[in-house]
Image (cartoon, rainbow over all chains, first blue to last red; front, top):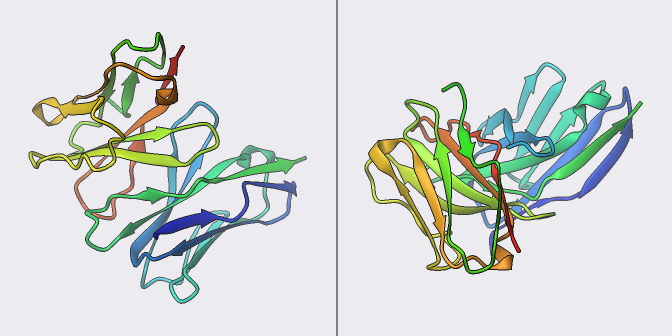
Length: 113
Length: 114
């Protein structure tokens, strides 16, 4: 069966460190993968998109990698800050899916001062 | 409007009652999605509208759930004869029609069935 797994339900790190979140998938051939941030009581907000033919994408302190051989995406936040505390969701769309996203359950990141 | 608007933000209803949840997408966005998010769970796809095409209803959990989108804009999700297991946050998202476009979500409607 098709699965998207975000390996950690929760991740606690110290301010200034790099947070690394993992998204693994099985039985999908994703055309692209997206990462979203969700704060309590709010809807998810788009952060980054990476396509199947791209290895890495960066945006300010954020970096996403995509390894279609390992079937894995890694999401990094460098120089983390308490304001980065939120739940991060990965989502993917398969070819032929008309761009409909399937979401992982998310990883709750807490950055301690 | 500037974002996706959902109403009401909170709804408490008695078991067995019908509820209607509203979503007002971003103007010009042709695709509209409904998802459900239960405590500690991921986003569960419910239904998808694209332009004038027939909606993809494959995620609706039972025939008590229905949705419509009038004039290619506002959408209403209706739950008939609500059950306690329907309690969740219902999220609406819209996007332009291109495949890889990102979703813009509303803040959701928190439904509590008592």
